[in-house]
Length: 325
Image: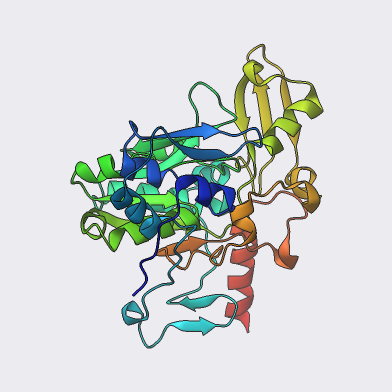
């Protein structure tokens, strides 16, 4: 029997398989693997030294670029909805956060933000693992832990650039506390893959929540926004990609008090300038079938035509019409 030689980190990156989730750094250790920002604006692992065969095999087994597995059919009920495009789902619903503040400040009707808050306040988990704006460089994202509902809300909103939520995932499992992960579908896949070789994942990762993903952009996409307004990154006090409305504007604020905005349509209307990372172009699970719950934007017609209040008005009107039929 031929033995399979595991890919090196360089091979995974050079073949466009890496999405920069950070799990390989967590497995190998920060003394062996760095995460660096490439000239294209992608967070990528770089080995400080030659990694052992054992470490590389483990990385290959869990990397969402080398292994993608769907949801376990044995865990699905007989009543699950099965669709050739959307896959299997226990339930499909239109909903939004009941709290108008959460609905306004979060993305996609505040659904993931509200669920994260509920899991904390109900005592189902001790903390939420997710990403938020960097404290020192607000255009960039960093891994955060939120232990209360207020922290979840303060970190709400989409992050369209590079993000590595699993950069210290092994240390988080070492806490031996129940938690929830809110991240991209590929990040969820990485955590699920690790669960096949590390029983702590199933023990402590109680809930995996995701967004239906349109792809993760290079940081260069954000840098182009700065260039449009002739702003240097060092001048930024805030860079909010979305939220504060539905879908919410992209808003930049500088340290000297200037503010600039782009509508969602202005930011994304030209698909040739999305600058999606290579791994996203071959993604087999943008829907997030590996997660427990996936939240999607469901604008009538497929895209927003302006700002709304997160479907509250449309949904109530639909309910009223249903009662009169």
